[in-house]
Length: 96
Image (cartoon, rainbow, N blue to C red):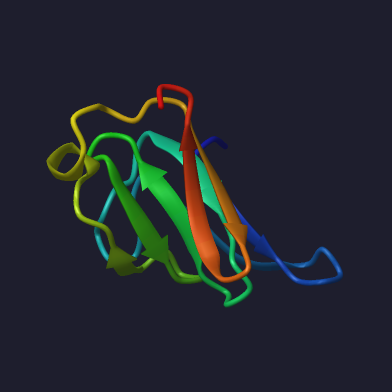
């Protein structure tokens, strides 16, 4: 299955599974262009349609989100890459 998040423990056992098409809070995040997981059991996705960063918990519920990049920048982010390092989330785009 595509667009499915599977969270694993340190022994590769499944902890949680949810689909980004229909999360438990009723949101849909398709297409997801990038994903990064920090150390705090949450993870970040870049929602291509809304051009936002979205932080989700282990059940797929939205915890936080950024402003739309369309409102902040004069370009659209395509083909992003997310990196999480030293408690900072970085987004890299080939366009800029």
